[in-house]
Image 1 (cartoon, rainbow, N blue to C red):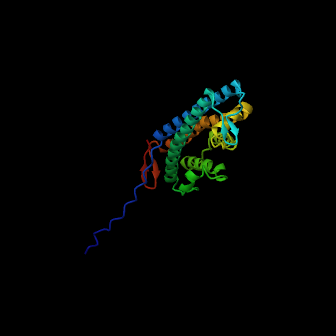
Image 2: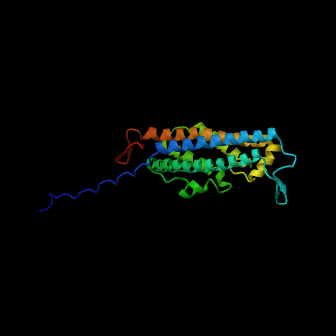
Image 3: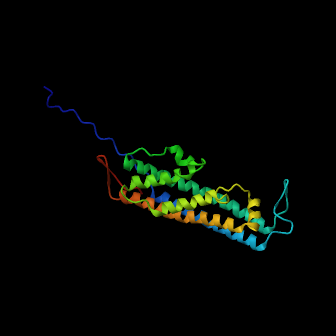
Length: 237
């Protein structure tokens, strides 16, 4: 007697919401530009130190825990180094915010589990050996999942190569020397400092192209409407 009553079919699960990418991409670009500009200023200060020459009293670190008073130029280099550290921290924060957003969106679009877990999204930059390839892999995977069939932008490999030079040179973003030791090296081995600085600045510049390329690939596939199962996914703002 109730044959005419049909059992309602369950509705499809709503598509996961995409995270915004345009705004955070602009922040990442600004952070990279700031970091590159400050590192260029640092290189100029190192050139000034080399041109001025080491004082007759020797390097700032005299050994056995003895440090002589700094010259005004050396003191200002300490300030430049501090500003550079703050700029690098800001750059790292906004870059990881951007990377987290595009990675999550790529996971939604591809409906595939990322090759690297959330842990590696952050720790992959810090753990020795792993930091030689995992960060590049995260970005490459995000691009591939956002724009399947498209070639990886050349900027990704150029950026990563420059990043590794700055990382492994010992005087780049993760140098082991303190500021006084770097000042002493500016007096004796300026070319090594400038080579590392050039790699870091180049990585910042090419990093801007990486952010723009990966963001554009994702937005290009999102603009208008992209199907996710039976539900449309609209462009991330």
